[in-house]
Length: 115
Length: 114
Image (tube, rainbow over all chains, first blue to last red; front, top):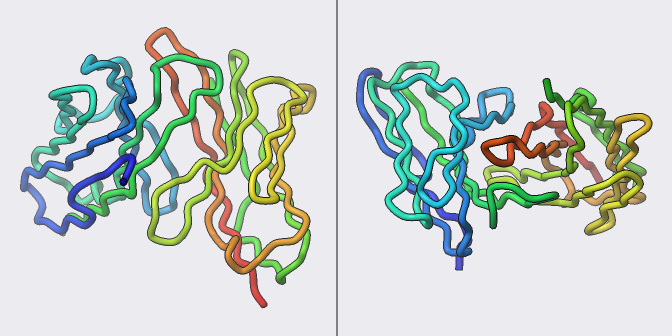
């Protein structure tokens, strides 16, 4: 009964490769997010989608391309992977895009290591 | 801009000790405030939240009060357990034209020893 799930959990790949991370939520939420957590545990939002529409794009390199086929899924595709892309990527969802105290629910994370 | 400042870690305590993790914020609007917890190897879980001044969020013995006058949301627990060992993140949520944006502090690692 996982609320927000991500696959894969671990991803080890070579520089220059292209990879995708998938996220699914079964909470019936309208809004989904991608966050990046660096090696010092600092978390920063990358993207947000509301009902399949991009609403937040935080100056992320265009090698990163999110795709939302439906409001329950938000995938992240990364082209030409670089060493600096090594991080933990978290997907999250919330009921709505705007709302006082709107709680975001996080997935377990995908640990990406670029060699 | 919006930012959250947390005390540096790691914080190491003995079991049953009193815990305080300081959090202060800067926000252009009127934010909602959150504490999230990340256990080793896991994702973030909401611990508690508060949406307006003087609100107190509480959960699992943890408490934090939204103090607008000092722009703070300090996390406290009266008696910590080994199982509380984790990284704690303070965060603020601001409504923007495009939607909600969570801004996190750098996290504070808590280690509780027997």
